[in-house]
Length: 106
Image 1 (cartoon, rainbow, N blue to C red):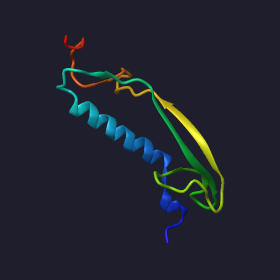
Image 2: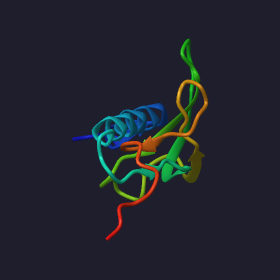
Image 3: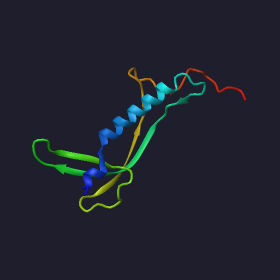
Image 4: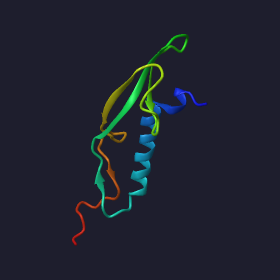
């Protein structure tokens, strides 16, 4: 039977996976005629914050994965909202797709 940890992922994993998907969208859209300015990315989810003792102790923030039950048998959940502004290695904003400056007429 799965435990609560099987229903959650680390916050770092969520952000890392988002980064991979945004990079994929940038690459797949590089030759498209219509592009989108990449603005702030807002993430809102329910998290469980737990304190871990021992050598690797500290606070752990786990995001409830999709389909997880809204209640937990132990611990407390919190709502968390993050706003990220994606930039490239030079700190510049990115566009998802090609270099066309205006939308095609039509």
